[in-house]
Length: 233
Image (cartoon, rainbow, N blue to C red; front, top):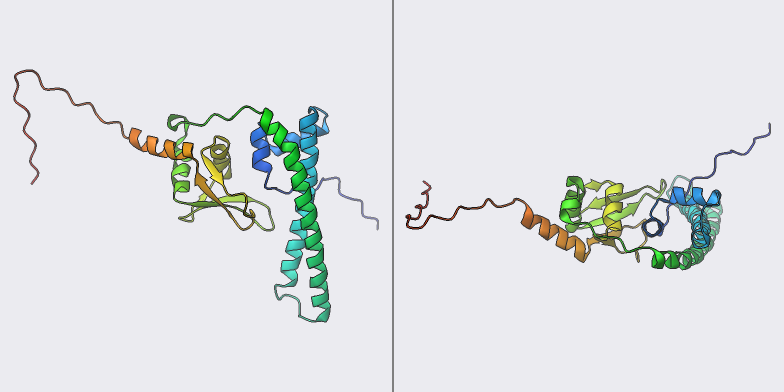
């Protein structure tokens, strides 16, 4: 029986540049790809969409070979010379796909930088503009947090020092506003440390000073005796 290829396109793999791209263009990666497919983008954005698509494809190849290597070395398959030969072959393929991924990431960065330079600088959020969950997330991140990507599903999550899992959408808003930063020199699968930016620290300390608002104390009238302090027993 002939098996027809699926009409469903392969799922996109997340990349280390997704947040920067979304912050620069003002919408998510799905919309960027759709606009490119419909020919709605100008030349700089079109180059960026093409470069990101190539990077995503390369990232998917890296993930495939990494998961395959993990399965081969997990102990599920009896260890023999054939398995060792296969592991060595997969390691070589993983190295090649990683080199391809790194080259395509450099191309994507080169396409992204002009778009970032032309984009308006994001306006940092102030304390009153943050919702309660966002401010709570900012406080939690101030104690330490990491951004992780699941090895197989590619799903991103933020884990704080207290092992609390924060909604990724909240983290994206805080990052786009310039309130938090992450160490992109480390691979996202191993966890990228997140810290507050200068604006984020100001927001946290300013919010602490504003909440609660102190109640005004009425000044004593001229000629009146001061109210004695209430004793506590």
